[in-house]
Length: 142
Image: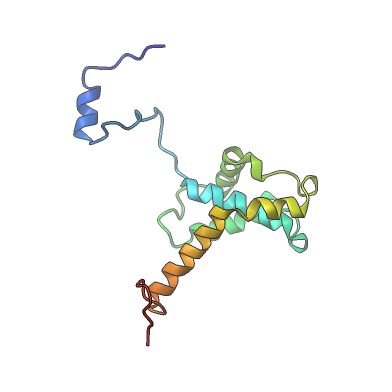
């Protein structure tokens, strides 16, 4: 397979400082940030683990999607139903029926070393930001 470039393609990439990046995809840009679709998929999976909350269906999740974008730059930029469909399409592995996977398996899948590291890193940043601790070895805040 070969790719034909227009004469200005390389010059445009140089001017936009995109040298070494993959070419831009054709079509309109995505409206929904990827962080939101993974957050929705993960929340849906965790909601189904907690038996008291019931199934994470679209009708239950759409108010959550609206709340996630309320007061942000994403408010009103896309429909909540579209975001829910997009989360399903981008992360199908998170949307198994609740009874098809055991709770122990889901908990083990959720508690990865990366997730634990992310949690502790975020808590560290929070404690530093509120001046509860300093980011220096062996120092204490008074």
